[in-house]
Image (cartoon, rainbow, N blue to C red; front, side):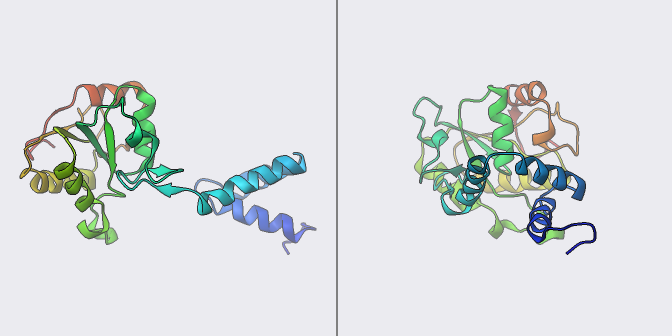
Amino acid sequence: MQKGQSSIIFDEAVNEFSSLPGIGKRTAIRLVLHLLKQTPESIENFGNSVISLSSKIKHCSICHNISDDEICAICANKSRDSSLICVVENIKDVVAIENTEQFNGKYHILGGILSPMDGVGPSDLNFKSLETRILSENISEAILALSPTMEGDTTNFFLYKRLSKFNIKLSIIARGISFGDELEYTNEVTLGRSIVNRKPFDGKTF
């Protein structure tokens, strides 16, 4: 037990909250104290929703997005343009692009970007399932919407080499986003314009 604290349960809750990204010890204490002010029912609902993340959340069998079902709501939505696929690094990028309301196609989540320094190679990412989709679905254009970083550009070039054998248009988001920025931190207007003003990708656009 830490000095000054009288509850092991309190300390354990603080430690769990402080293990989350961006949550320091002081913020964790404030969050736990906030929960203690709530009704038992509210706290139970909060806990159950967290437990459901591991027991009920699935990954879409098509695009790898998070979903309550085998196929996510975006892939199942027949009103979306199934000929247009936006290739992104992670789920946070899908959320960021969806918030712009400028894209009505579908997505493919790679699950990361190539980073030899971090031990992330082609076999660690969802490249094969992307190729399978291009072969089996009526896809005419793939938008490469990866963060404009060295790793993102490397992944773009790898995808260009890998997807050039298919009869589809390859495009890249316009560089209204500064080099080194991540999509999730880009404002919605800038990101939306980058999608709308995308340009053909020839493997040399960096």
